[in-house]
Length: 191
Length: 430
Image (cartoon, rainbow over all chains, first blue to last red; front, side, top):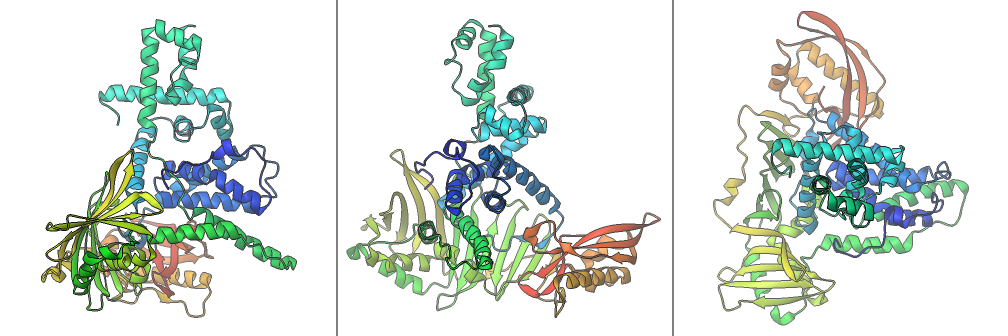
């Protein structure tokens, strides 16, 4: 399932307006389920959390469909909602750090699901990359995430961030230059 | 083109890794300016360093979950409108259901060739006498192996299950399930948690089917007649027999069971995937000991006496909800919790704080702070983190600390006790 050839997704697969019927909505889910889960995963480092966030986005998108008919760029809007919800989620996760039995994760069981090892490795990669991105200003880090993690063009990233494309370009550029400098200072591969 | 313009415009090439060859001006400048060529190379390398390499997809049942939620949202509205026609999301639902079934069955599954059942029958017979198993999960490429020990009765029902997780975000963790309870030992935090877990086997059934050698092999045998996989036997004359199971629907995925011919027990199970003509190991379970007579003794947890304990089994935790509505019990628990702290009744306060040991509270509070009186207990509201299924009760408490008297505001989390929905307690610290 991981290696399947899949049809285009995300903005490449969605040119219409906000879906109004369940049938249209199902097509929206088809188009955006992988991009939004991937987008959230690369911010949260956990597929279950990422799917919770993406599910919330889709459910809200449906519940608010009448209010959203005027949204011009559905893709940018969904990404923006997901980014905001990821930020909320991370804040809540931070707040949860005071002790609770939830920490005990009583039902944790190792999984033989072939996906689990890959997801664990992907999660570790997210943590490594986030450690690096924490060294640059948040606005630059977010522009880098959008352009590098999510394979969006700088124009698409600008629509999501609601700023001029030139701003996105400069943020990405300065972000990468800062990371390059850090690598030099550390005199080692930042991997 | 000058260097400044080049560095302004080469970004897309660096991000995509495609370079600047598609733009003749940029390409010409790169060839003529070693400094800009080096700049582009470094920016490309930096981008590659932080570009995630793992592809992530939604799980197979993700869409089905969303669509079911949507349909459920839709139905009350239709009912309210008196609509007779009910929307039924048939094709996608059916497809998703199939995926769920396939996912639940995993690959450990079906074989077809009856003539090759010899090893399985012998293994099934050997497994009938299984009372204790010690195994190790070995992830590939990431993380550390988890150790697992389980004890069974003569009917094959699991009596005890212990898993040692060497590396979690809370440090090493050991969990032991037995007799309707789960004990969790968080070594790094020196913390032990005991909770009621009456139907744990039901909750972890899918996982047990995946690792319990008796169930794994019986599932293979039972599915034999369904002809959904092919099985190849190698090394039948040797001490070790390899059963290579390939599912028809997923020919790139295989499971290889290594059977010890002397005992007929499976001693290793590998899950592999064929990629670019090569077998890639996805995960391994090593069965270390079968029926070790001393094995059951190794199940017990050795929790240090000074560990902080949260025990919801030995002692009654929380307050009974009775006929109170959620907001009322949330306010009552909060009030009684602070009353207990004011009275120095750490037994009761601990009982109300997820079963915390009285010593834990005493050490945390005595000599450091004093709870003087309740100023107010406000109206509880749903917890800011909906997944907790709890409420937050605003409380104002007069306190003394460092020679000062002051009023402190708390948003005390209150919710049903884990697996005891009729009792409510404080959670999440205070």
